[in-house]
Image (cartoon, rainbow, N blue to C red):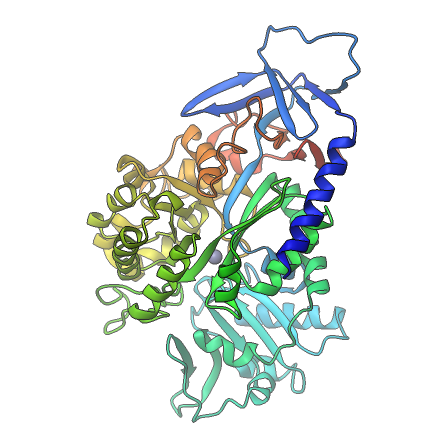
Amino acid sequence: MNKTNILLSATTLFLSSTVALAQTTLIKNVHGYTLEENNLRQFSAIQFTNDKVDKLFSTNENYPENTDWKIIDGNGATLLPGLIDAHGHVLSYGQSLMNADLVNTTSEAEAVKRTVEYANKNKSLTWITGRGWNQVQWDNKTYPSAKALDKYFPDTPVWLSRIDGHAGWANSKAMAIAGINKNTKAPSGGEIIRDKQNQPTGIFVDNAMALIEKNIAELTVTQQKKILLKAMNSLASLGLTSVHDAGIDTKNLQAFIQLSTENKMPIRINAMLYLPTKNWQQTLTKGSFHSDDNMLNFNSVKIQADGALGSRGAAMIKDYSDHAGHKGLLLHDEKSLKHYINTAMKAGFQVNTHAIGDSANKIVLDVYQDSIKATDTKALRHRVEHAQILRLQDIPRFSELGVIASMQATHATSDKNMAVDRVGETRILGAYAWRKLLNANAIIAAGSDFPVESANPFFGLHASITRQDKHNAPENGWFGEEKMTRIEALKSFTLDAAYSGHQEKLIGSLSPGKKADFVLLQDDFFKIKETEIWKNKVLQTWVNGVQVYRNILK
Ligand SMILES: [Zn+2]
């Protein structure tokens, strides 16, 4: 990427937009809420000029009459600051909208059936790809096999990712193309599942997934831009005005930069560069990138310390409670992990490291402790992505080190049945431990990890507040003492998520001078019954003072 050219064209766009006349808009007749620190402020109308908020009107305050303002009647809808997802995967989400969707399948047979249906509708594909199966939700709870696919796909390669993206299911044709056989060794940090005769069954875990994936043709930048746009428009329809993209390669970054310079971004993106990826050192040397309109920011990296809990890839200090002798996987040895973290910190980048198991979390916090001191970068607000299973003694270290816990509430409600099996009754007390973290003064940035979970932020708000699934189970919430209040949950999806992207002065709440990013909702988030929070509907989404989504039924 040529940064000088990019900066130049971004400046040109900015100059031409300031020449345009200022347009002031007033949206009246709303139940508006925003946060000022930890306090709720209510308002009945919002006035903004171009991309910035001018004023919030209190309930009994009069609006000026006879102006040339554009006046919009909110018809009593609820207005909240735009919601921010601090951890999602935009390209995979876009692909999930286009690939075979295996989410919520109840058996291997159903997953195969859906893949066949998808293939019948998309006959020109050279590879059949899909995503979203989860054997934990299936009757037999066992991994699927290549054989089940081979019957329907003898000559077409098939590759289906698990819901968490930490394992993939290949058919025999895909394995043949990849040259996989009995003698193929798994790379470090990866696992090939084998049968009793030592034959690969078709399941590839973590780093072993690349053995298959490297044979699938890479998307071009133009193809990526199309998928990213589809994804971002879908995210806007859910009420998200900003997303932190948790680990992209340099090509994906280039696609975002092109969309931003073409002024096509419907929502804000904070991009994290995945480490290690092709040309990562050179990309970091070039420094951070911020578009003038702040629609695209790149000042962080994503590193993966371990795998996921469902596939027992999360690195634990002691054995899994349901698998003796097994402690999960660290995806990099400690020396490499230190190297990536140090290099990024030295280059002035915020470091966001995925850690799920208690061992991975401890190691990441240890490395952060040394590296933050050595590089003097506490102010960069480094993060742990997921921070899912923590030793109780590691919880206070987040606020001590100024490290943000970037957590996904719906992981708790989706994992609840499996998590206790995996880690047992004692370790679970430090798992998905929002209340313990908040009590220890940690900042929690909320997200969903879409497409692992639904991108709908109201599902996350509901899970944060109730610790229940959509069937209101379990009663009083799963480890209900960890629940957040509505204000805390909203803060984690707005101001604190903005803080975790160094943007709390720009977005995350509504006040004069901040960006006009907000959503209009059907139901009042603060009055709706707890059990109904996830059902709220987005009527309109506004980003930078521009309406980017409108529910046409309303
Ligand atoms: Zn993720």
